Length: 181
Image (cartoon, rainbow, N blue to C red):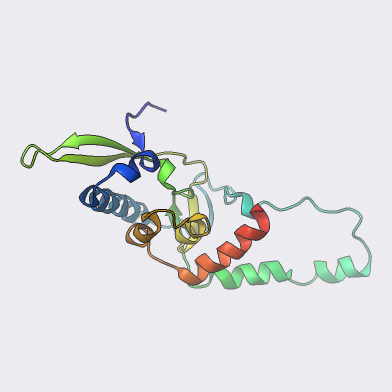
């Protein structure tokens, strides 16, 4: 791990010019495209081939109190949640995903343009990679969508960084409101 100088995009956003914002968004889009270009390993999971490292995918331990005919019947058939999961992944191949792409996890730093003497910014780094892994293609957008707040223009820029998946984003909003609040 190393120190990277810069300030969070969340802290800088309100003071950026439109030109600065468009430049940063273009840089972030390029970074995301480079991540998406990594060849798929053919599974959904963490970078070390473990389970998906996101709290929505953690399951509860088995309940030893569940026994008898109902347990045996369920044991011999596919769980509804597994069936639904298979359907939700159809058409969404695993792609490499940061997993926590919020403004606060982008570091930017000031530079100058010697030709125009205008202040410019560059994306210095994306931080907070513990949730990174191979997720369905909609995940980054759908995971970001529920927490967007229309208090400034940031939500309008998300679809310039990430390919939009509005249906999946809306469903994740339902999941988010159920699990997070």
